[in-house]
Image: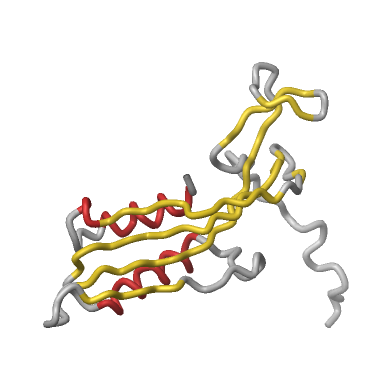
Length: 162
């Protein structure tokens, strides 16, 4: 399952605009991009390119809201779309009745997601003569404290007789 697809689905479910059972998702196709990258405290062993579907059934609101919600989520949570040259999502809206007040909305969207690993003696991934374990989130060092540092000489180059 695509982590990002699940996140955007959870976001939409949280908006409570249709019953939760009216929102479904699945991965249509997944390709593996076997390029490893050293990220310091962890490695990206590969990336997954997911072609996904998000289906919203029996929606009765303004379809522009859904496009705005999906676009807002992508702006906030998928900033690498341009660097991966991912296509814009496709949205297919099908009227369910002649009155045009109820629709099924089918969103096709692509994601690229890293598969991240850390060295772990008990890990279940043998690679490069080591054992590795999967991680869900990048490992980042965060400073616990910061000392104030004074510049070496604030007045360097400034003459006292000016």
